[in-house]
Image (cartoon, rainbow, N blue to C red):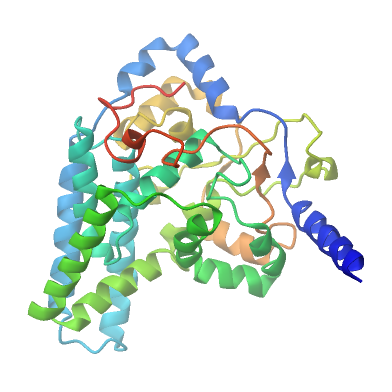
Length: 365
């Protein structure tokens, strides 16, 4: 009987793993980065902090705090409260999510310490502390793109198996911010460092002061804004658009022994990039993580022939719609590899990667 149970479990695990696209090839960004630098060495001069980022963050934080104060006496389930949270709040907090994404690459200031502290400030209207933990998980996503057990942007096998239906995918899209918050800790845990403690302490103090001197409805507005930012919201389409494979692939792509490269990062060239720090230029960002959002369009124009033939998206709203309703697309439509890359911020890696790494990244090799 135990033998039969083990056999069933192995078969189930094999069935779940087969839903993904497995590859033995290296992730494509390092190779393309080297080719672009060889063809256009001047693109390396695009790397470095963008001063405009801090002013954008200050403006959006001020906007969110103003809205929170205005709504302090507004009923939570009233139309003005809910519409403001969806239209303004969710858009603003998605902008702050992606500001923290920029800052995690040391692209707001030259000083790593200044970037860590400013990320904590940008975190305030999000209402829940996450900026300190996001950085090592996100840098590992870059260094270990698609690596099973390291890249926490990948859905787990259980997600792919149990949410493989229209209702399951609709559930995932509605609550994806919760999946993105919990999944990394389920894959591997980071050591608690001073910047993590600082992030938590500052956020809890801010939330307490907001409730005490402004009102609980103001905090509810910020929390609801964060939830809606990662739910069925146009700007939330970038979570799915960036790495899910929408094009039909031959069945052999599920075999890890097949050495056939396939697209695994997808850019979006639409108007919502204006609100999201150009995160839609995602192939460009993965190719050159040290180039800030304002200079990614120039990279695209300079090396246009490297990007012209890559599959891309023109609508994040359509991405969400197709992801939910297309039976050929699901959480298993991600490229995975068994090995490669490395963990940033793990017990066996340098502490400075987790807190204050060097003078700032220029070009990742």
